[in-house]
Amino acid sequence: KLENATAKAELGRASWKLFHTMMARFPEEPTADDSTALRTYIQLFARLYPCGDCAAHFQKLLEKYPPQVSSRNNAAGWACFVHNEVNKRLKKEQFDCNNIGDFYDCGCGDDKGKKKG
Ligand code: FAD
Image 1 (tube, helix red, strand yellow):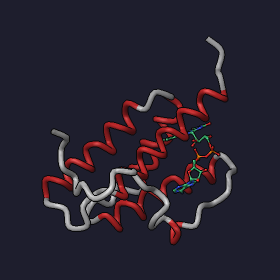
Image 2: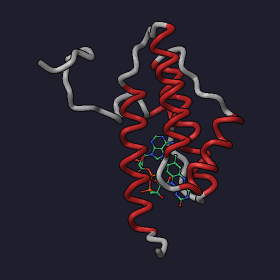
Image 3: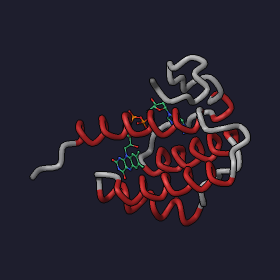
């Protein structure tokens, strides 16, 4: 099948949106189990990302810059940094990571991570 740059970019935008929004909701003071869960999630995300070429590049990036999972700030800052590394490779603009604070809003209000129901 032919490569479809539009679909690939759309997948990228959707994925980054989820990725950064997840970081923005990660606990400020995670338990050891929270941190392990996030690290595992990131590693599996990099392994299973549907664009194989992208996944291979991203896995290399993770080797060079291991996920920071010790707090929300560290996780969000790390995610912003690695996305910027991808931006660099694709010759896109750098995002100002100082502005990441309120940029990613899950829209879920003050549910404090409660499960539904
Ligand atoms: P995107 O890079 O998708 O960004 C979406 C929005 O996020 C931007 O408009 C901006 O508001 C915000 N943003 C930008 N930079 C940051 C940042 N550093 N931190 C936080 N927010 C930011 N495409 C390829 O062609 N080749 C690849 O090898 C490739 N690898 C990828 C690897 C991964 C893990 C992912 C998730 C995507 C990859 N993509 C790849 C897709 C690519 O990164 C873009 O998503 C796609 O090209 C669409 O780009 P965009 O300009 O719309 O903005």
